[in-house]
Amino acid sequence: MCEHIEDFQRTVLMLGALALYADQADADDAFIEAVGPSLAASLPEPPPGVFPPGYDPDQGPDYPGGW
Image 1 (tube, helix red, strand yellow):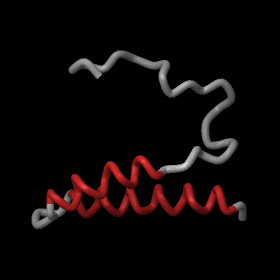
Image 2 (cartoon, rainbow, N blue to C red):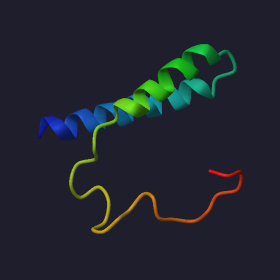
Image 3 (cartoon, rainbow, N blue to C red):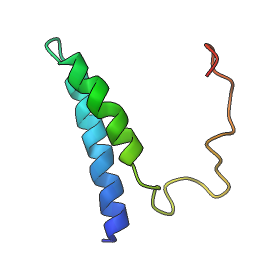
Image 4 (spheres, helix red, strand yellow):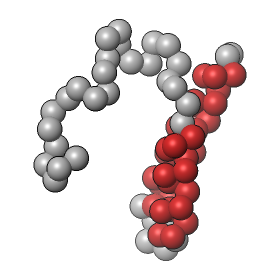
């Protein structure tokens, strides 16, 4: 398997594990706030075929709250 795909999958798995941890009653909020954005920022470009051709993540519905 391509190293790029392995990095992407590994990072997605870590983000999923962090989300599960964050849902626990005794989760450390400071840890989640420190690690979550770092993991998200380290997420490499998705491997080809993950999104449909022509997909643009900046195009989509307006979200409430000024995002």
